[in-house]
Image 1 (cartoon, rainbow, N blue to C red):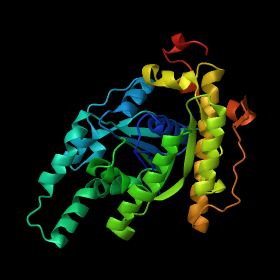
Image 2 (tube, helix red, strand yellow):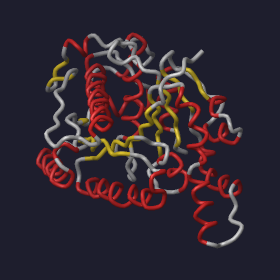
Image 3 (tube, rainbow, N blue to C red):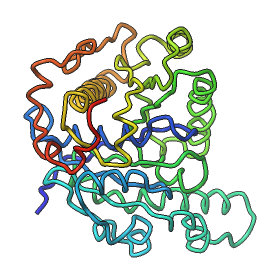
Image 4 (tube, rainbow, N blue to C red):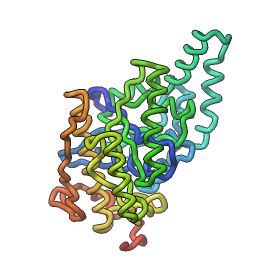
Length: 328
């Protein structure tokens, strides 16, 4: 039986481009936040709002779970709790599925346009856009954090998730087009939601999370410099997700902690989540991230595991049938 908490913080890793680390970040952040270590130990819910259902696939393999219902089937029943599956006592999930492709049509039928007056069009658009948010509200009393994994688009389906968010993290590949994509999602897409819905859209951007997916150091450093110049030094997460082959293996085998390569990934995301929490605290206490803000890594110092990382409780990830992955 879940105990009521203060309202959950809803977090989305957002980018309009696929393959930039959104789902990886979402899964790991939720896992780290829910670990039974004293510094974490949060009640977390992960919702897969992408028709590709990659998060569902990864977490199903990781925890050896099946998902009898999808988020869309639960939405149609007006009962999101009916689709919740317990992965661990601290981590629950609502699965995604291919039926998300028709969610836009479902909203059109649920909230039909009856005339073309601007006021009616505006009100109908708002009803469609905030339908999922309305259903999610009761669950926010049951969790500390809710992550929503979204697809790489800007349609009504993604809008339904985006308006739920309290905070956004922007995963960004360190390559030119991804930098431009980050500019677009912040200055165009999110700004459009602000323009359309005003104070009803409350999401804040915590910062950009760099993903180095190609070992081109000069380009990588150039893009990081561009990012800091465009958004400010304080707007870029300290941690950088490197192109580790092990991360690429997780979608096939599930997330494991069978050797030090895995532990480095867990340590990296422990720092990412810890910095995420710090940034949230600053937003809530000061209204912004101070220009002089820096985060000192606690779990992965350089490329070395610290004592804090060695104390992460990863027992449930150490004995999975993924040992054939081997050492990288």
